[in-house]
Amino acid sequence: MSERIPMRYTVALQGFSDFERSTLASFFRLGQQRAPAYVQGNSLVESDFVIADADSPAALNAVNDAHRVQDAIFIGSNAPSGAAAHLPRPIEPNRILRELDLLLEARLALLDEPPLTDWVVSSPDALGEDGSPALDVLVLDDSRIALKFLQTRLQGLGYRVHAVQTADEAMALLDAQAFSLVFLDIDLGDSPLDGLAVCQHLKQRQAHPGDLAPRVVIVTGSTRSSDRVRGDLAGCDAYLTKPLMEDEFMAALYLLDPTRKR
Image (cartoon, rainbow, N blue to C red; front, top):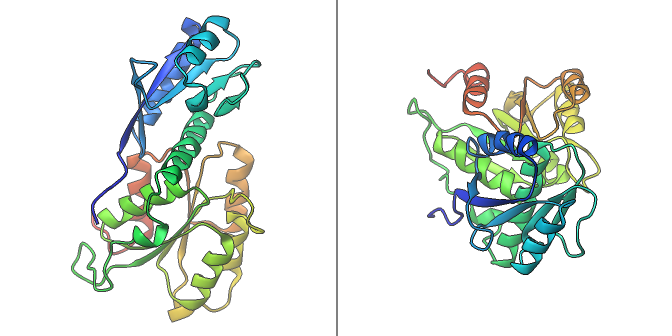
């Protein structure tokens, strides 16, 4: 099926000091190198989303007058009622990316975008880049947007992708069929297990469908060093942080997929 979700979204800035704007510039550098991509917009009215200084009365008034409160992430201590999201200082670009993905996910839900099952475009007889049958890959993430774009990216590289949003769904698939690669988010919302627990379960299993033990890649928005240590202890084969950078993403695939050629 054709791609229905735009790849780039504009974000307007309202308020902030010169120093904080330089910090937000790093957000836009991150935001342009991933999917979905977020780029700085010039118009408070026409941009898809807004990042506003919650401690600036002028910024609060401008966002309110433009009727964009419900589309704005407020940073500071005085977010108005009805704000789409509220983050404390200091500014953390990865947290902004996470909140924008959640806002985008909510917006697409209102637009009645297709369910995950409609996104799978790889046919059963799909071929990998070397002409052999495509490898089956499982992606687990509670974010519908993160699933969508990682699935699209992997399918573009010739993999047959299975996307799920809960640990229970992932465990059922892992019990039923063989996967060459498994991509796991750590934080899975309301799921009883997080991605690290799923990884640990896989690594401790004595038998796997098809006698194929999948390689596990942790993909997380967390930048805490403790989570990387926990990933190592759980036995993951690679650990990537969101937003995914192309060179790190491809390096992991070259390392873990022996069929992939440079």
